Length: 491
Image 1 (cartoon, rainbow, N blue to C red):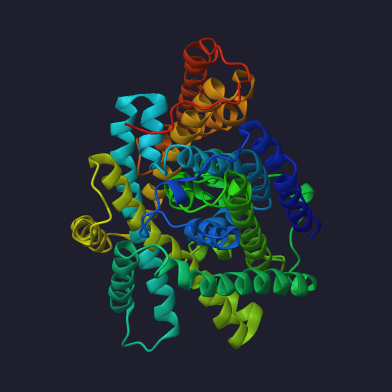
Image 2: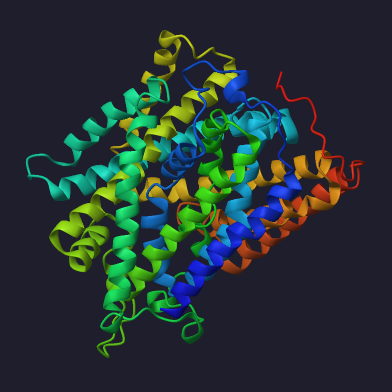
């Protein structure tokens, strides 16, 4: 319990202390934001700070901080370290800088931003990578909630039925102006999300006498059953959205097009990431307390592994047993709202990414329709593939995109803010480079190389990227602390 409460305190302190530091480094000013400069009543729509925060939170808080955190709980309390430190020093920085860079580039998609600061080749790579990732995210967040709803409804209404229902909603949310569906429904979903988080946290604390949370200082070890999977880099990929997620960089431009002032950026972008870290910490700690064996059988977290980590079944069982019937349904609604409110904006972001790529004006409904229909049909086709396989590829591509976004952010900060401040993004970028490369080399869906070899190559890749950053960006940057930005329009 102490570890859990301490983690919450650190996350909140991280927002006020390190978040404020990152904000001072970036130095938001009073320039006109794209919400006003490019207002079109479709994608560029001024929103209040509270609404923008809520939309951003629900955009990014999909299944990742719930399913991913429960799966990460298989390694034991050590997962708390990654959630807390990852959120403060990596995820929060990533989300804030990607959102603010988009805001300073007229709401541009992350692929255009990466291309602008890392070169045209990376622009093409990121465009393709982003669209594929976003479609996979949409599929994951379509099939996942469909499975959850199917558990609460009559057997005749199966997963496939609810998948189609959710797909129809996604079509409307992708096509219509952002304030027509997303802006109106998200406050309702937000209530469900808040009830879910508070309910699970409160119940876990209430039952701590019979289901005590494990303290990290008593279990600084790999608790994965049979130690079959190592902590690094597997846990850092598994717990994606609860610590750092490249998917967030694809979502932040939507609110970069809606915030009224640059000074709202920390509350909207960094604040939403900290809130998601809190959600992940709640589910990870609840999962450990709920499934850990204390009967002397020595099975540890084997029951959680047998349930296949984070999935519809484990969330349903925990919600019902911890909160009872009514509370369980409310908690389940929160869990359902999370992925749906990320899946709809995933497809919307894919539309915007393609539109930015080919310079397609999105004021015209027919042009939005032209992009939306093929994306949703592709998503529906992918939904028939194995869910677990899609999730694994999503997790890796998610963290790889985060790596790219961080390197672009480090380049921007070094060149246009102050060369001695680039480390706030370069350090987490270096770490995520080693994680992404090492994982894909040893993973079953990757090259299946020995762990020692893949880890070594991952570290070497990170060192090479850091060296390139130092030589090509840091050394050549003459700006020390001008606080001036370059031309704001991507041409």
